[in-house]
Image 1 (cartoon, rainbow, N blue to C red):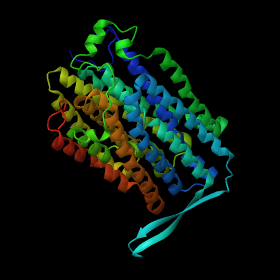
Image 2 (image 1 turned 45 degrees about the vertical axis):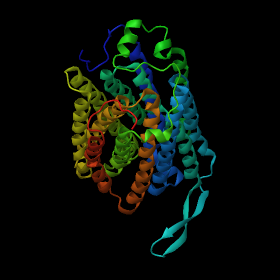
Image 3 (image 1 turned 90 degrees about the horizontal axis):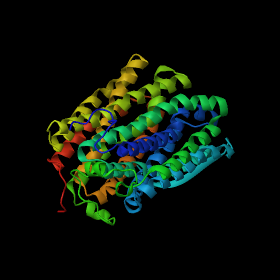
Length: 459
């Protein structure tokens, strides 16, 4: 059976799995709304609170570092708790953290935070003491971003685990692409709605309102979701369809030690690809609005609309990339060939992004960066599915968490360095050039480590 580009209205035995996919879609949409409010309000917050580009860079770096650990431990906890209990727990906690950003309004704008720390200097041939100084409001936002990052990290490992449990192999990339499109929908709604909320209520209330959306999702999830084997509305025919090509689920979750994951070559391939290419998405989230605003002198509302256009383009890639792999598998291609051809096409589509800083018009710059963002989403849908294709079900969230940890830990440095580069040069050329080749290098690593995608046995 060839899977269609959109969820079928009449699926084998039913369509409960697409309802689950819809819930996952809205969870990542809420995730991205809460995450991107800061990026949309960057220029206003810098002006009102006296932040520099470097201050903003370190605030985003704090989120990335925290998100890295949230991904790592979130994936681990998701494997232990299960999706039914784990996912709403994380959504509730990150919604609280999102609302907490508004509490920074109680910090005096003129107050300053300073931290003195040791640093080894090759020039001085020894340890020197450096001082990091920033507005206290920036330090408050760093704490809120750390809480947000730690709690949002469980979202994607949980969603990938749910897809592995609810979909046969040939539909996983499509389902992943569909729920992952929620990131772009959230990222489209955010830059359109947030400037209006800011103009109407101010930045504090904007954080309160957007943060509260997650509480509604938790109520709906608790009402609708159940594991496939226990779901009261899932037919026996659809359950049999879901289980095609899947190992029989264990009656009790198996605890897979973290160190044992390093015995799988597929884990190393996923980790290396995550280090090289995955930080690009964090850069797009937190710096594309600033890039467009500075490069073309746009006002906040204009930045919002063009940022929404970027994420709308990016949404296409997640669905198309997942659909392509499923289409190829349906036409008789092996999972190995379908996944890697899809990854290759996505990697090639990213290469022109180095031209974005030279684009003469805003629409051309958005088109170039949007193509790269679209390719990144298609890449992610297939790379996540590589984990589902090769790893035991009880280890999937842990592996996704491990890859997310290294990706966002690396991304923390990328965000921090980006802020410093902007502070010194005012140019995005170096960063765009860096990411243009990282996907091809990542695919090379995947091919060398995992020449054939198939369930691995412990070595």
